[in-house]
Length: 408
Image (cartoon, rainbow, N blue to C red; front, side):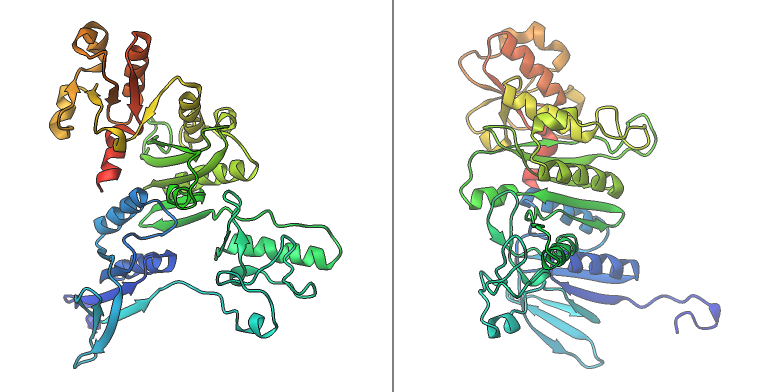
């Protein structure tokens, strides 16, 4: 009625509470914002999008806040009550109360295995057990989709992955096997993407927290922040990319990407997902031949760039450090002084890259030097200069941009 007669009156405020920080919860929150709702997202975990590593989830959360979504993380729902006039209140375990005109429950899915249990089929950690031909413990019964447990392509562990792509492939494999073909399911790597306010977050393969949880220590990670396409072409936007790989042989293990250019995020994670499924190494990423025109990418694409940076690490050309390693190191900041006005690291010594060769005498030779700049590119050049002059030095991956991730 606020549009009655074609005259636009003040639109009444409408409040929505979305419970759940997964795909459906975030997509619902975005659409409610577009409809003019004041939206609060309540999530029991301490981050949204559980498959992401925490620092990348923080970027997603900041992106949501930027577009008006209020966040209530690490707080589960305790109950609901209805007020006079029909309004609702959402009560959380911390004792907070969120008023709402609309509440959306987006708490995820669990396999309904009642029929399988009744049929005497083997059930694993919540899902129906199947082999790589989609047969259950009864060879005459097949199962596919969200109700089954699948083998993680990277870790080899069994898990529940509710994704449409793997479910579709499982259905085709089951049909092939029934028809007499020797089709087999390779497992899943959980390749996923979500679009949020024109941007996107995507991932494939193992996350760092998964590798740590299972006790896998044979991995390294890199952070890089390339443009979505050639910087001189209008509209380029920064991508945040995290790539995990084996220290022992360079095999690709997983990747996560975020950016305000959704198609650019999709393109990189899709390429990395295929590479991962084919058992590629970071050396293969160096040589990957991808589409290039300045409005779509760079001559050295983000995928190539990731391979080159990771290969530099494994070849010993760029000894790597992370912000967790800075406690005892000598911090050298090679940015320009004007950049330090915006953001600086307490205790770091500033020698701009262009002056480094003439000021080496100011640096200690009895301590390891950890080098930083904005994105780690200048720090790479500085690290090479220091190594060639007999210093012990490592480049902090991702520079100040990855520090922002760790502090988010």
